[in-house]
Length: 84
Image (cartoon, rainbow, N blue to C red; front, side, top):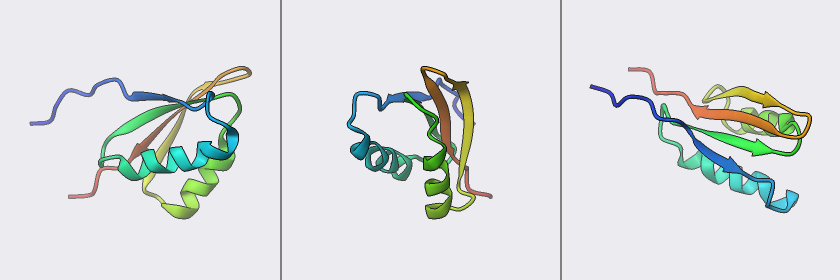
């Protein structure tokens, strides 16, 4: 039986210098278990990150906007569960 779904972890990268943000986010994506996700909080639309992730991990993750600015952007990023 599967566990009830919990609220995704929230990762606020606004306190990081912009140059460090993508490296941190890639660490988190690499560490995600299949079926898990986290909510990224940023101060701008992280759409370039989406393209970078899609290039590195084509079709392996989900990208769902939770809040779209103008001050705060929240995106739930999840790793797809492996097909049985």
